[in-house]
Image 1 (cartoon, rainbow, N blue to C red):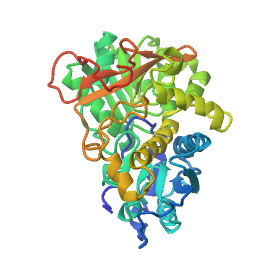
Image 2 (cartoon, rainbow, N blue to C red):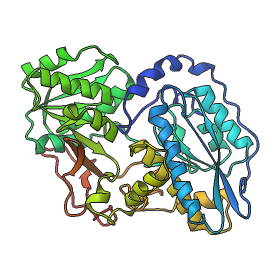
Image 3 (cartoon, rainbow, N blue to C red):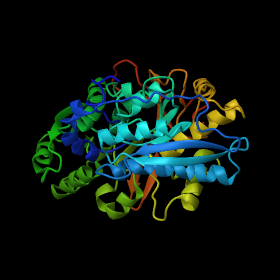
Image 4 (spheres, rainbow, N blue to C red):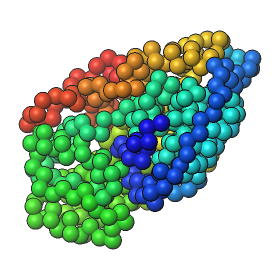
Length: 442
């Protein structure tokens, strides 16, 4: 394991910075965690004539559980639906054991060790801010699937499959933010983030993109203390500088506070661009604060089931399974979908190899997938390259909060997706590309 990596945690914009701030007390103890690999590895571990035993691990309890436990719920939801339909090639999935790491580095290491000792065939639904067990699973060639919310090195290697790809480039300019700013005729922008890497780092690509597309950005504050009692000073500076667009890499709680402060200062008309908060429960409880805000997504919006039924079968199936198999009160969310997608990728690999199930055959088959979309739930992932790089073609979706609902925006025709050249040259306008064949809804 690369000890440089997991103590320098990085979070893409899928999840908020609440987790990031809570990580700080644990990071001081990074050097004290011992990694002991388990010697046993077997290409057919966990496989019988009628079942395949699959393990899960993640932060089911602890301070990060609200952000990460849904990953396991999503995987379980998928496997329950799969087993009800008969499984794969006569085998049903036994989803056990599922181990709680307690949102702890040592707990995550122990969880991975236990799963290897229990001889599970694969690990599906990893959801944790501390994926210290990754080296153990990788060393034993255990196919591993989950939410890529850690360092690239922890998800490196052919057996590691992040639900949206195993490699994240947080430094590449994000043309999406410039696109939204320009569509709203913004003249002066502001960027806000907390003073921890998991939040401020997420805004690096936003700041770079605003510069690349020549959008004046007089206010950049990426040193806001988590849980700051007031954002009045930042909003006052925005007011003095004529800011009419603000991008935030804070969590939903901070974003709500920002929106409320803008309203208190008579700046409620400022366009807001959030990377966290696409959650129906949050919207239901904070309609006034969210109203009008834009959200960047790396998935098909859940609302597309009602808007375009049948166009995105993966989202249709997810929403149906959510109602039937998830615990009462479970809300659709990006982490929940991540667990679902992880289970789907694993299952599609099983379907590709047929009844002769081995770990090596599964990994080889998945790494030949060139346009995996989870049946329309995600933009295409090319697993021949997704372990080490990103494509220059970047297709995303946007939703806007309007009263009590999220509304997909900026898509064309039936496709909710908007595509950009992420590595295009510096220019005045953030332009979109034609949505190519293979992108859901195209």
